[in-house]
Length: 434
Ligand code: HAX
Image (tube, rainbow, N blue to C red; front, side, top):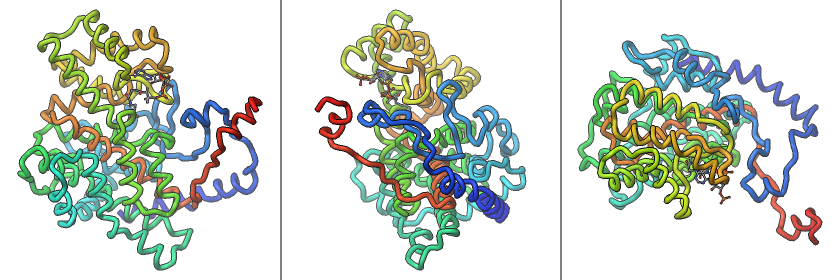
């Protein structure tokens, strides 16, 4: 673990002068302009965030620290005999940009184990929640309940030093990340398995222990590793990443920030889309009486959905303009492991018809599938069929990237966020209407 914090410290020292120089000497250089369309239209494409942890190219898709997802899967150390890397090793990679050695990854796995015990009061709070609370509301509640553990908050109250503020942020982030899979599994067993909880197995890494605590057998451990890594980061402007960054910019700690991140992720246009995809496919399946629809039959379902004013969940994207590589890695997983699965066949027929239909409809700028179109089917196949839980899985994954980002935010001293708003009168005046 010392290796990671030492390495990170060195990286931060090397990086800081670049940010300082850009601010001091080039602070007035324009990165772009802002149109009225962007101000009213959700700030699409406005370049106002700086991060080195991931970059989303509209035509290529996501790269973490310059690497594509298949490269990340290939490069990061794996547990013996497993196909997918230690999730813990992604934490090391996203923070430092360096691929950890097998020994460094395994050290980190041990460090995470020391931090993953869930406080009893969190379990008590979850147990006391209404039985029909959404799992995302429970997850957010559990995370914010742990705010009292914050080392950053404590350091702030003792007089925070700007140069070292990233250290307690890093500590909180590691503590929280280590606990999130266990909390997720607790929520799952409480809500859907009659509170028949399964104890932590200290011999297992994050992915392995998560599968164990969920009560889902091998190879679900590899599914969990693949899923958490695939969902970890998508640069900084999406709702979950931006909420985390925005909240942390007020010097709120990691617990407040990640609870807010989960609230944003819970929206149906963002992370909840994976649940919506499954709900929608199940509706089609019921109507088809389990028969795999022809392309014509599926097209009719898609048009009916569009004509009723709904979006096709799992399709479209605010930035991407091609098939999401996160969809592709999961599709390849499905072709290898669940090629005969009926729901995968539904997803496959959808892939054949939806892009053409969305193009014909002419509204969506991107007719291609995103990450959420495929992920629920994999979970369903391995027995996790309570689809309103799916966004919780996304939340565990997304915490990795967003926590790495807010650790760097503190390291680089990013200030409180405060864009400017105008009134409609003012915008009309700029437009020359008034
Ligand atoms: N089905 C039907 N219509 C769609 C569509 C879809 N999948 N995607 C976009 N459109 C529509 C929009 O609703 C919008 O219509 P209006 O002009 O009537 O408002 C129009 O096409 C233009 O939208 P856009 O510029 O292409 O897309 P946005 O940047 O505004 O929105 C979304 C991006 C992802 C929210 C959008 O594509 C969508 O609603 N997709 C379905 C929900 C979904 O899959 N969300 C998950 C996205 C990935 C993610 O964040 N995961 O967490």
